[in-house]
Image (cartoon, rainbow, N blue to C red):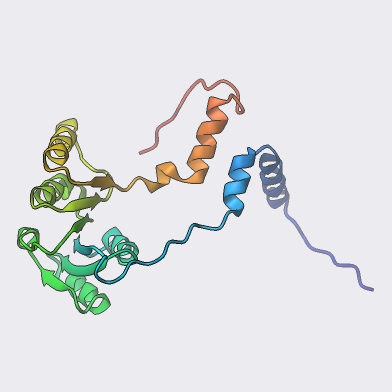
Length: 197
């Protein structure tokens, strides 16, 4: 029998060893969650699914719309860029197209608006959607100023609409693990935090 040899670099060995050592100290809930299968829900019937509209079809908006279409019907797309609009129309041929988000807001059959615009339009589109009686999922950052945030909160309370922002990364299991390790002193006393933007 020929012996099996493989070359492992020092860097790879150290990285793998560090990963294994870290895994050995992980809390049980974290390991259980990693092994757990995602929960599956029964799909709703076509009459129960909300009608969803996407404002800005490029970049993250398209991914958000794909995710949302698992739970609702994408009935409208909006973008100023004609190439983005054409690509979205290919993906969702039954969806109505708009180049002005204000016209999209006039549709009474739309329940949810996904706001994937450039950052400085998030507040404007979200406010318009809530005032038009629609729930909103808005990409991060939700706002650029404290004042914008206060305005969104006020309108959400007045209209009783749902306003959610994309902060999945902050609720990811790795972030929760990091928080638990810091809070329980597992990495030592925290003395300095660098913020990278």
